[in-house]
Length: 139
Image (tube, rainbow, N blue to C red):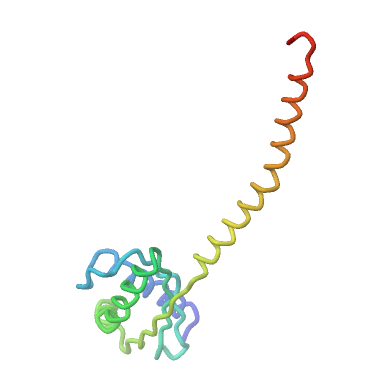
C-alpha cells in the first residue's frame, strides 16, 4: 500500500475515534476524559494499533478504559462504514502514558527549579534583614 495513503488513513482513524468518543456517539456514559494519541496501521491494513491517554483519577481511568475497550467493535464497524473501507482493520487498543509521564517530568523540573531559586531568595531576605537591624540611625 502507498505510504502516504496509509498515513492519511491513520490520521482519519484517530480523528474519527476521537470524534465518536467526544461527541458521545458511543452509548457508554463511563467514558471520561480520553485522548486518542496515535494510530499505527500495518502495511496490509489488517490491524490498527490505536493508543489512548487517559486523564483523571485511577478509578475514572479504569472505568473509562473498560468503556473504551467495550466500544471497540462499535467504533471499528462505524468507522469502516463511514470511511467506506473495503477491509476494516482490526482495532487493537493500548494505553499510552507518555503524556502523563511528560507531565510528571515537567513537574519534577519545576520543583527542582523552585528548590534551586529558594535558597538564593532566602539568603537575600536574611541579608536585608541583618542590615536593617544593624542600622544605628534606626535606634
